Amino acid sequence: MNPISSPSELPEIATAAEVQQALSLSRREFRRITKGGRGPKRIILGTVIRYARKDVLAWIDENTHAGV
Image (cartoon, rainbow, N blue to C red; front, top):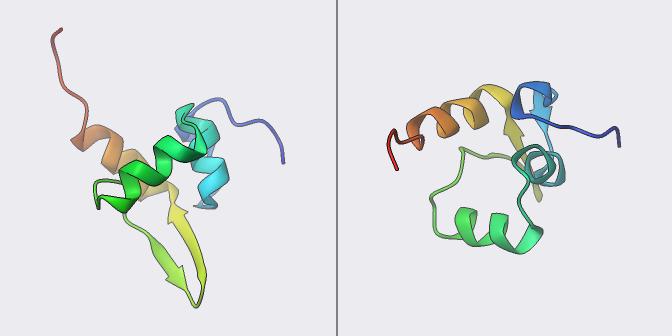
């Protein structure tokens, strides 16, 4: 897997590992977020879960707050 340094570099359809890398999240932290239903929309293909780049970017925009 090539290093992904930002969410905009994600492939159109990304694995959880690719999203974790792009967001600089540990596997545990990403699972905590997604298990609570607070993560980006998922694409479920049988037993496989993927994430659309557009949904990851939208989720980031929705969860970006101004200020300190």
